[in-house]
Image (cartoon, rainbow, N blue to C red; front, side, top):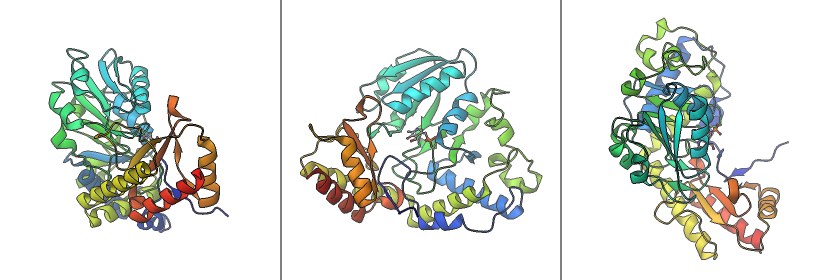
Length: 362
Ligand code: PLP
């Protein structure tokens, strides 16, 4: 039997009970009118959490990485200049994905733990086709100012990774000038991994690659099934077998979030993160991300000298059923990542992880 875990790492987080029980409902076919209604409502709720009115807002049938692939494979024409703000692992990955799509990538490197420097990014090239940045860098626990980037992007399309920000901190795709955005279900939305909430506006869709190299992620083809087809359910054509149980689960998770209220959910993440960060500092631990730019939903903390990082994580898992994350990249052994996302953004989770960490460090 698998013991329940407290998933306090960088994701997945524990799920909202509503999202989990939806998985056990009778399975529906992907063209069943009842399922199409569930899909339409899911797309509508996704518009709310994205802060967009984009018709093409849909859950892609794969994890967040597929969202990243879809963003670039549909928008990068061979030789396009893509400026990528790199302040962690997922910015690095964007460079790799964009290059594979034929982009001339201009990476703008930042010290890990620091937010994106908007001025440097927009000055990196005079006329990029695309500017890309990660809103919430899961590798470092840093929030970047996407609104400022959107205001300064000029004619470029702005691609934004919102995997760790959606449903956890303020996100306003339309107001901020996000042209293409992708996210994941398994973090602050409190749903199991498996879908990539995605949004693209008309400006970006009009500039898209007519026949992208990926058939599965071709937004032109997907549009016949979800998103833009919402109002004409009966004419929908088969593209792939949508993971109907996962969509039902996302539907339930989104309904749970919106019932609480998006701003209330953001505030809940904010206060849990602030309490955790204060508690860690009271224990004498040093936070990694730059002050003023720390994500509430994902806290990075330096492993004290002479402490075996992996041993502490093992102790937390084996004795307390608590998962926290190791650091990423060069910080694998010197940083811990503690996530309080979705249903875990609560005061009892803060107390639990602080008490367990105190015990493990004793
Ligand atoms: N982007 C960010 C910021 C992430 O945190 C992650 C996953 O942790 C991804 C992209 C990739 O998403 P997935 O692991 O769901 O494919």
